[in-house]
Image (cartoon, rainbow, N blue to C red; front, side, top):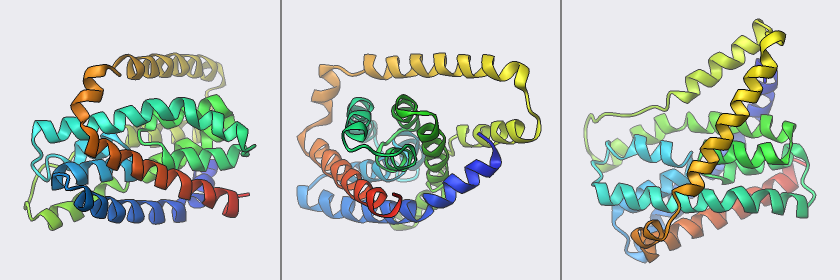
Length: 244
């Protein structure tokens, strides 16, 4: 991927990103109140769904001073849905005959963690992977304003904020590929990257167990599934309508 294709893909997903993040956080707050879920747990699940799964949860949790149980429940909820998305999204994409561009946008908006987005989009096709990766990482930058807004809403003052380092590494790799072509080594790098991704996705699946399912609890899981289905359906309608 180079800078020019990244800017194009990022601009196409910008409106989708703003609308989906705002809508998910608002609906997540309402759903948490209706289901009477602990406020911090509900907010962590909403942030994980709205932005980029575990990375967003890890960034927001110290700001709201979340307890270990609250953090575990939110991560477990997102983790379960990530595992399901790896199988469901490519299947639905082919069933609906989505284009590479459409699937890339849809998966970047509706799948939680970056690793699962890359896994699903990579299975669908190279163009879908390029679009999905750029839009997802641009989406991940919203961790910063959402975390700052969280600090204001929860009135926690100045707390430690964790920004995922992979965003900076992605930008550096993209710049290097654009301005310092490395034809001799690019094939090796791609092969190593795919192997690393395969291992990552295997570990995601290996961590799914009965204990994880039991530890999450029914209400947080209902909230997570509801938000996920809602954002997935809305994003699918958007890409079918606006990104044909």
